[in-house]
Each structure stands twice: as C-alpha cells, then as structure tokens.
Image 1 (cartoon, rainbow, N blue to C red):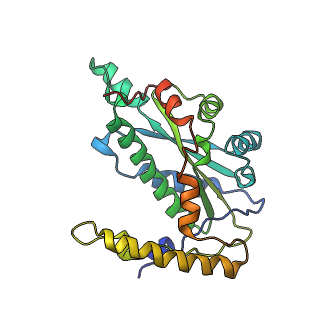
Image 2: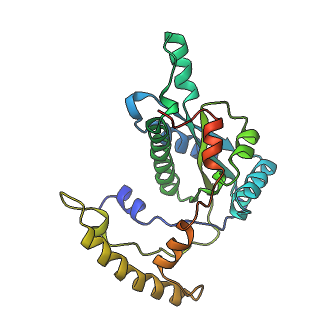
Length: 245
C-alpha cells in the first residue's frame, strides 16, 4: 500500500489537543487540498469558514452542544452549502436561480461540502495533525448563521476541528467491508448478518475499553428514533432552501 492509503486507513477521531498552533503553511495546504476537490457541474457551491479566534471557537463549542475539543483545537473549519455564489452567476447571466428550492440543490451542495471535508481530513492527517468532524453545528443553526454572518442561500453543514493530538484515541471497528461495498446490487441479507456480527464485535470493543456497555444497534436506534436537530429544516427554509421543487 502507498502512504496515502495507509494514512486514510489509519484514521481516528481526536478529541484531545495540545496548545500548539498550526503553521499557516500547513493550514493553507489543507485548504488547497479541499479547494481542489471536484464539484457538481463545476458549480463550486461550497465555502469554508476558517475560525481561529478563541472566543468564537468557544461560542461554537457552546452552540454545538458543549463540545470542549472545538474550543481546544486551534483551528475550526465550517463547511458551508453555498448557493449564494451560484445565485450571483445567475444574476449576472440574467437567469434567476431556483435550484436551491429543490432537494437536488441541497443534495448537490451538501455533497460537494462533504467531498471537501474528506480532502481536508486526509490532508491534515497526512501532516500528522488530528481531526474530529462536528455535526453539532446544526444543533442551533440560526445562531451559527448569525455568528458567521452567512447570507441567504447558504447553510452550515458540518465542522472540522484540527490540531496537534495530545493523545491518540483507539481505532474503532466497523461493519464488514462486504456490507459496505456491494457487488453489482444491494445485498440486504449481507447487511442483516453484518449488523448482528458487528453488535457483538463493538460490544467487546467497548467492554475492553471499559467505557460503556452497549452495542451498535442500541446506540444508533437511540439517535435515530427522533429528529435530534429539529431546527435544521425550518432554518434551511428560511435560508432559501425551501425544498418545494
């Protein structure tokens, strides 16, 4: 295997960071890697907000459900669905934009933001830095929008803490590769078996770590029995992503 693949396969989320800052050259390299990712129709319908100010990071930590690693890591990247810049292109061409009012617009811009985050993760980890993705910025989306002064037709999708690891966390097991990469067609039987097997495997992993007594199915069911970020939909609508087309 080459070094890039080994770096990707060794990924782990880091939640403890030193006070050491990130060099500007390293941060720029991470941003350039994210910037180089493909986007649908070359629309480039995403932006990144780079947050280094400590007070602002502490506020984001609070809005995201009091996640202290957001304030501790020296850099926090916010990945934005950005149909504002494409709307400007429409205005210039005299063709009003409507795609943000459809599910396709949300999917396209959020997927492009996800591709950029993936590149940022790989770039950061290749430099020996630690990262942890943050979905909690969608917990209080309007407050995040106000804090970052986001215009209409934009929405904060996810964040990424970047810093120097204080401690390396363990590498969590995953569902089987065959339940992830299906051959020719979706195989539900393989998925059912994989879930059963993984519940046993992850329970042993947690037992060995001594931090909880649970399995994957119980954890996921606990999250997905409810809409845990109920403000996302109304805030999307108020930002112009009406989902009515």
